[in-house]
Length: 157
Image 1 (spheres, rainbow, N blue to C red):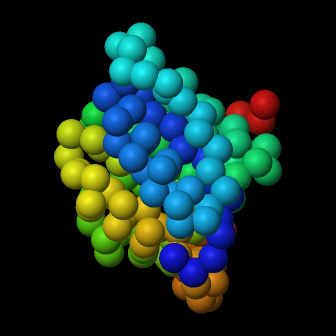
Image 2 (image 1 turned 45 degrees about the vertical axis):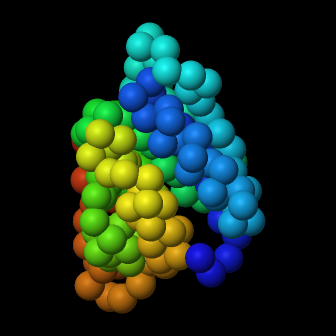
């Protein structure tokens, strides 16, 4: 990874173990990590609650990017994309983890702990954190269109 990133990390009960290992790895790499739970594998730990925590950390300026984990990655992706200003993507391959940032300015990486092993998850997070939005005209134009959709269809808080 190129430089220190302020990153929020959270997971439901299914993603707890993977989240713990990622937090340790990210801290060892010099990132400023905010661990937003869960604190165990309690089945009452529901994915929307943890997606909300990381999204609020980004929206509140406490984190630059976030990683959120559930069993499949689908639930946290759906929940995270309900927040204005959040561009969450489920990535289980390295190309998408990098391209999602470079082309789409993705700020939340969603992972499925039943789908990716730790080594791949670590590599996905590294790609996600080291990538930068290209700001090329076509990508900036498309991002503006996404933001216009968000402004039109999401109700202000």
